[in-house]
Image (cartoon, rainbow, N blue to C red; front, side):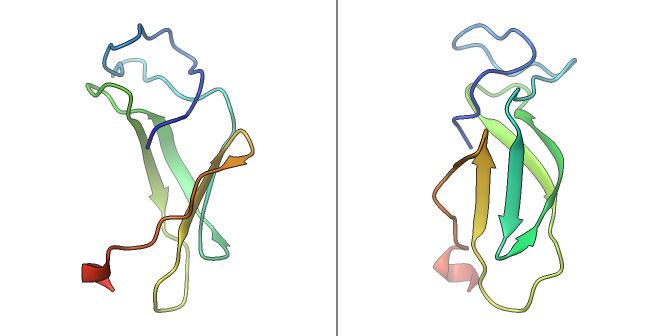
Length: 88
């Protein structure tokens, strides 16, 4: 993902995300799949990549079928993401 805003570690423009310590957004990050809140294990700049936010989360118990992933950072929601048609 992109658009996480300011992070807690200084990262120069165009520089890859650091690995130790990792750079995490200062704004609150939330995620849900369908109506179920997902537990976020890590949200921060992807180490070694430029401008990429990595999010590791636990998929909550959800019913079978397609459910949208929704993410918000600092209370601003991104467009929901659906699984690719090949995986439906």
